[in-house]
Amino acid sequence: MIRQLNAAALLAIGATIAAPTANAQFTNACGGSDFFSCVTLAVSGQGTSTLLFTVTNTSNGGVANNPNSVFKEFGVGNGAFTGTAPTVTPTGALSSQFSVASTNPSSVSGVGFTATNFFGLTPNAPPPTNGLHDGESVGFFLAFANSTDASQFLNGFQFALHDIGGLTEACGSSKAAFSSNGTPLSGSAAPASAP
Image: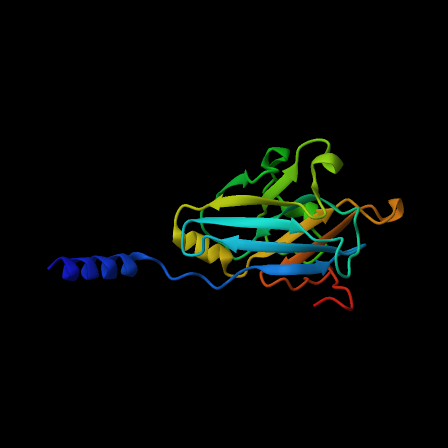
């Protein structure tokens, strides 16, 4: 009797867990408007109402080869999203260095970012000191009203960044935008040798 009850309980629990959304993350995606920046984005929490986006600046490795890279602002958006705007919360060892970025995507315009919303982080003053430097990671939670909103947001989201650490003073600022699989968007060209 107990075994039957346990099996029935496990089946009931399994039926209430939402199927995970397609894997939405990428490793060492590179692109940029004036110089190349590279980023790794990991997404967890698919199938729930809270998503965790973990951003790692990987610009010194690979094709960007930029040890001076500093992400001033970065985040995600989805122009087709019709749900309630999520609450954004920074997390991780560096989270005290960041504040929630404006929901206005104008700071990442011009590189193919088509979303009309923007949820992410910007460094507390001064940006060059508290930005996301090469090799550093920080995360941010997006807490949605429900798992349906979270799933809708993940379906076709875009990631954008503003890098203020150019290789030289002459090109000290660049923007890049990527699809949810890491493909650079128009206006955010990929290097010829990018994966």
